[in-house]
Amino acid sequence: MAKRGLNIYKRKDGRWEGRICQKQFSDGRCRYRSLYGKSYREVKEKMTALLAAKEPAQKKCDMTVPEVVSVWLRDKKGIWKESTYACYRQLAERHIYKETKTVRASDFTNVCFHEYVNNITKSDGSKISPAYSHGISAVLIQAFAYVSREYRYQLPDLENPKLSRTGKNMEMPSEKTMKKLEEYLLSHTKDSTCLGILLTYYTGIRIGELCALTWSDIDFEEGILKISKNLQRIKDFGEETSATHIKVQTPKTLTSIRCIPIPEEILVILKRRQKAGNCYLVEGTKKEWAEARTVQYRFAAILKACGIEYFKFHMLRHYFASRCIRQSFDMKSLSEILGHASVQITMNLYVHSSMCQKRLLMNRLTKAA
View (tube, rainbow, N blue to C red):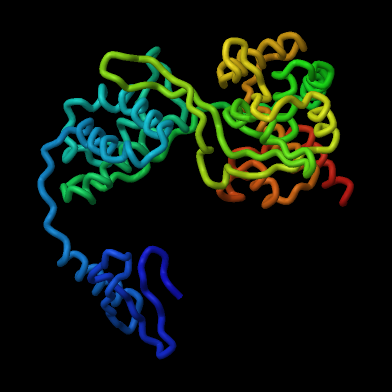
């Protein structure tokens, strides 16, 4: 069986065989060379030595940390989605460029790297979230690895730091609160925003996916919601501009492109409010669409009208996932509905047990005795 990351197999005769591509032809075919050994380690060492002999020696790097990141961003710009490039560049401009502008990349050891990431602060001096710290560290790790590999520079092999988790545990809204919100949404389905939020409440879609939805994305015969795009506001990076623009693009991952069965009662409501296929489900005032921050403002106003303490729109996705677990959804189905790449992501990010659920579980102990 092949070992992960290397083309090494154990043969039927008990020996280990490793294969290295010696020459790649224009049609994609390779001419391979086989190396043999009595153990996996022996073959791996032979392959490593052969590959090292083929590669040119690494050069000393005189660039600063920001220069390394800039090279990575420049080379990858045409490959990434526009939103991905904008996200990485914003992280670099807000933190990396300013705080490491005089640091030589060759001197940026893991000790320096970890100290830097764990001490990043916001403009007001407060600590940033672990998720944001992870994003910044990911930019640096990828940039250093890319420039080292592609340009053969001697650069430190950066490793993920252990981030201190100082954030509060997520508090889910109570069942009573969510029921109150649901009742309000059901009684205001003539309003496109309420209709869109209600659909989110029952499908767990992301806010960008909701904003990009048109009526043609709903298959009324099959009762299916087709998620194939999202709507985002992306920063422009011109020399003399700080403007942004709206972009409708494919979702963040291939697994985010999915079909979600719509609950029958919600499908009936959607049929009553159905409009022309090219119309956006959530309508704008000046444009035909409503962007994410507009929907967030409207959502906050709805919570206020309901007398509900504010919580973020994304909490609807968390609540949906937790409610599905309580209804005994299998994790594979739920993961696909949410558009996650793996079941583990669903478990780690979106499944939260309530105090009520914990109490029921704890009470089972006495009943079982």
